[in-house]
View 1 (cartoon, rainbow, N blue to C red):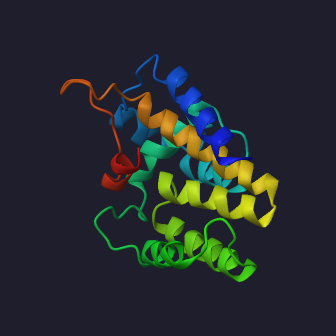
View 2: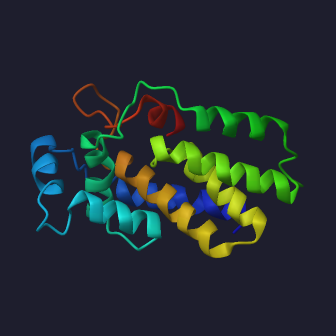
Length: 177
């Protein structure tokens, strides 16, 4: 998928998703993701996300905002994987990267995503890396994840007024958005 098509697709889905605000209800999210009988039980949602299964907007909503209640959620910790990703991106030839560079980039992104699995920046880079490697299935999976996470953030509020904020779980997600 070409970058222009990907960006157009993401902007289109954001526009559609922003029509109705879905402000996170933290108490409801906490209760639902910890209920092992719920279809929104967090471990199951995360496994489906990582496997690239198709998820609904509601499932992405619970997955994204439910991450704040996971032991791995440490928004203030350094992310050494992200530093590796940034260093790799700074030195590779974006238009003509070597296979070794792409392999190293995918490994670094995978490491960084252990700490920040919903980073728009990392999802975008993974879509780029797999697209460059010719893996269209994984390119689409990460592009779909990116569009859904951006749609989830956009649908949480307009961000135009203090009483209508967009809700994010990591500061960097707001910057990426």
